[in-house]
Length: 338
Image (cartoon, rainbow, N blue to C red; front, top):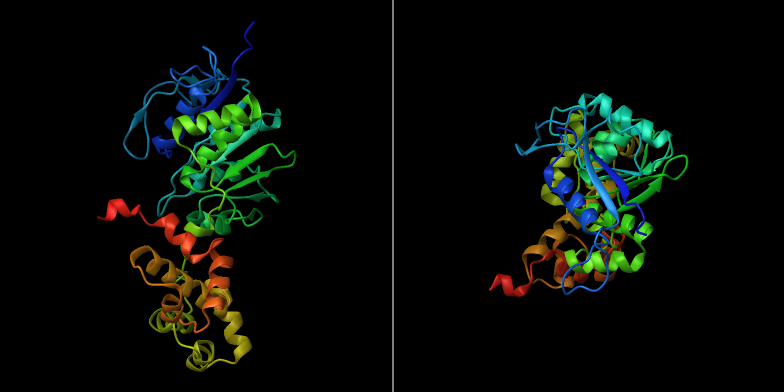
């Protein structure tokens, strides 16, 4: 006798992009099923994914794609799992505008003991549902300022690709957009075993994002803080980040005592002056690695470091990998460049 399939409800917001919705749906639908020429599986599969919304009628998503939810929240009083896909928050958009009824349903499911998995900007939904207050979380690195502005009590771990969190450890957040694959494989491993997760990773060519988000994080520069002195310093740093005496020169140019300068710089940018310079230098080094064949010592000198070993240590600390590994990871295969 076959066991009942696990119900996975995927709430659909108008702000969702369809790629994650369909990717999660198709992956979980395929898990546990028999595939021709691929050993393992059974005819009925492991999961029964369903798209859930306020109304079971066509709705247009943020990319312009129309989607038809299968179930309404009123007709879904229970489920086994909830998978919250990415929501896209553009400039001028507020997370408070997300569908409040759908958010309330997600909170109700978690209160009833249902595990919630959220990919990328889906963590914003969990934060709006007040499920992350006082807890760790991760999301796409570009949403860090949004979390700082709207959810200061959430302990954001932007460097991590996945965080299990919540009062009962029943919430799972994943970072960048493709991290939904990690969550899908995690769900398959939990309910179907590691061998089935490995089988699905082979079928779909998925890979665990073991390096986290650090290699992909871009520096988010706050230039809307209103402190003209610090803004002028930021503009000067952008043209002179390779100087050896850069911190002393910044203090001199600001006309402020060192302690006052350090305090104002951190308040305006979120970085210490040294942290800002180091991060900007590594950003430039990443660009050089992505676009040239320059070697380590040359790259180190270009961004302001005479000691290549110091540069390599800083690069690894800020990105989670060595410069050579970063180049292999980010640059296209050589055959594509011919």
